[in-house]
Length: 233
Image 1 (tube, rainbow, N blue to C red):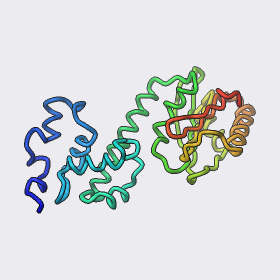
Image 2: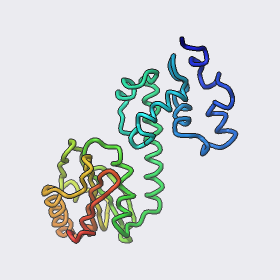
Image 3: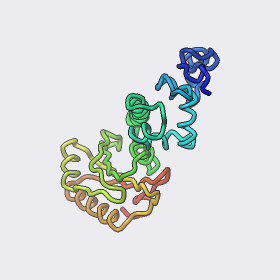
């Protein structure tokens, strides 16, 4: 039998169980990931409160926000009773805002001095992706980031890079140097033959127009491969 409190929204819960009130009393840092999600979705389903539903979602994502972010709106709606399209969109929007804030903070102060700088710059863009994407970072004469931009999006194994478009963009933005990155959703961070060929073509193109090509990194589930570090530039 389903008891009445199982159908209550957050507003109707005891004060100690209300994440909104807890946040006001103790600060947003005191809330767990599930409690933050419960605030977003507002209510649960007939069998679970918003907090219980959010805890179950996080458990099934191994309490990993990055794993949660890999789910689509359709995934959330199909897998979790009580999550409709509106709630799923709210969760996805919150995750995207967090990603953009992290990227914005990096761009404000980012000067490229090493491959780890590149990893920190591009990894937030690629951490959740089930497919390959290829990104470019445009730098000024002091190797500070002017802009980062996605060039192409491919399948789960490979994406095609338009070298002339890359070079045109570099000139249009008056960049003095570039860096590029792409991801391997498989988790394998070693370069393929195609990756090596793309790197060589970009290097030749940049040399022809007097632009410095500093590095190409491959990002794979928290790890990366740097062509510059490996002496392949």
